[in-house]
Structure formats: C-alpha cells, structure tokens
Image (cartoon, rainbow, N blue to C red; front, side, top):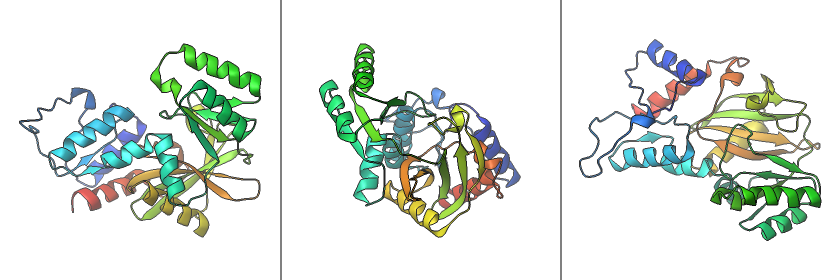
Length: 276
C-alpha cells in the first residue's frame, strides 16, 4: 500500500521485479472496505508504505482485522507516527533520549519550556520531514510561539512536545533496521540545527559500530520491531541518544552512499516476514 510512488517506492518496485515477486501496488486513496463483507481481494501479505499517519494506522488495522499480516503492524505505525508514544516506549525501555516534557495547555507548555531550559525545541507530536519544528531561545519567543499555535485552532496545536536542544556536531545518524539486523547507517550533515535530508542535509556513510548497532536494535524492539529507521544524535561527549523511530522511512539519501542495496534488503525482509 502506498500513497504515491516516491523514489523509494520506485526503488522497491524495481527490487520486487528483479526478485520475481508478484505484487500489486494499492493506492490507499482508493481503499474502500466493507467491514461486514471483508476484503474483495486477499493478499499473501501487506507492505504498508502509506504517507499519512492516520490513514496508515487505519488501513493497517483494516487489513489486520481481515486476517492479513501487515508490515509494519498498526501498533508499530501508531507508536512510531506519534513522537509522544515513541518517547514513552523508549523511556520505558530505559534507552537514552533527549529530556522531554509534554503538556496539553498553553500554560503547561510555558512551564515545560522553563523546565527544559532555553533554548528548547518544540515539535508537533505527529509530523515528518522536519516541518513545524521550533527552536525557542527565550521566554519571549516561547510566549509568541504559544500565541501563534493557539491562533491556528487545530487540536493538534494544543499538544506540546518539548525537548532539550542537544549540542550535536552538525549531524545526526539514520540507521536502517530490518527485523533483528542493522542494514546500514548514514550521517546527515547540515549547518542548520535541523539535520533532515528533506531540509537540505547531505549524507555520508556511517560505520556500524557495536554501540550504534546495539542501541538501534534496542530502539526498534522498544517500539514493536519491524522495518524501521532509527534516528540518533550525539552529545558533544560522544554519547548516543535516540530521537525518533520512523515506520515508513525515506532512504534515498542513504541509498546514494551505502555499500549495500537498501531496497533489495527491504524486499528480502518483506519476503522473509510476509511470504514465508
């Protein structure tokens, strides 16, 4: 299932065809399910690459309810698509993460930022591609940000996810985890404090050290496991922290510098899990 064929989906389609795997690319915008009648078509398995978090969760649940195995599962999608749920899972597992404070009111948000200390980072609980991230340098900026979010009227803007700003070395790390193995890792570098390839970061290969592999596998396990991208950042001391775990990862930047065929490894994992 996919919303549109991005570069990653086209790479996956090519890998499926090279391996001779029969597949149907289903656009989630065409999905119409009669809950009483059940699905009109049955599949050996469902590979979920839907872009919208909400649609991805419900589509996965619909197929799971009809007996299909879905990769990634609805539980994993729900957890990874919500930064608060992800952080709760990581903290519950005892993994190192940036200090995080959550509030659901404007007054609470201001208190959360004061607790974290300035500069603080405010992120939407649900969102991707580095959008709507704010670095809040002082109380005046905090009050202005809160006022603007309140004016937007969306219930999503009443949830405040506040983290400490990590003094990282101009880069973060994206690690591709496929089940119980780490496939590859890449540094994402930028002069901007947001190190996301969607925001212009460049990529270079990152060595798979034992500490990086262990932490990435533990992070993937904490959210339920599957086919995931674990995002890490380094403190100036070298300590690795887990920031996010992504369930529908983009990997074209990583694929450009990796010494392995990421799309082929993904398809291999899909075959192992869904077609065994």
